[in-house]
Length: 188
Image (cartoon, rainbow, N blue to C red; front, side):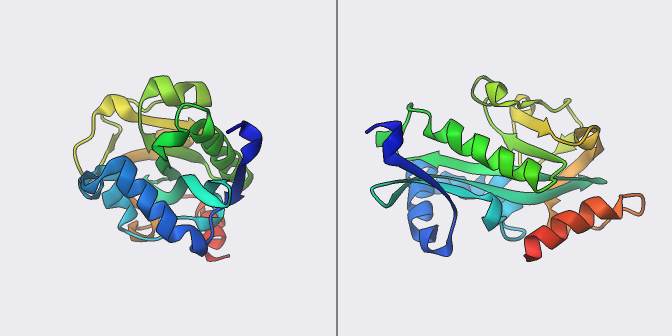
């Protein structure tokens, strides 16, 4: 397989079963107790900001983005990112992350957060969120809470418990444009 053999596309409903298979293979049944999974249970992911990699018309990798809130801050949660074992270590996951980040920035998302390893995600622009700034709904190593910021100050606005944006109460001091832009994007 060469990089030319891989096609990257926005996620479509027809990919759902294959994506579920990839996530089950990559993370097993333990995925259901992870903090990020708990957040994703709160509402839908952003299908138009989520992508798949195909080889021969078959989904071999995927990445999803989900709207989140923490205090007055709003962002997107990246994950799960999963690549079939036979296609690992050739750059497919990193390319999917880059595509998702470009799409998030173009959609005017203030920031993207994830739970992951800094050596992998750091070169893609992610850095640690200050310890104690946010709290996940289940235990997470605070060194694995990473974010990339598109709007200056967006990561600093994330404070307290992280939840799906559909479950968050809009803070009175939150700029309406930021919230409205993400909500209208979700409804489109």
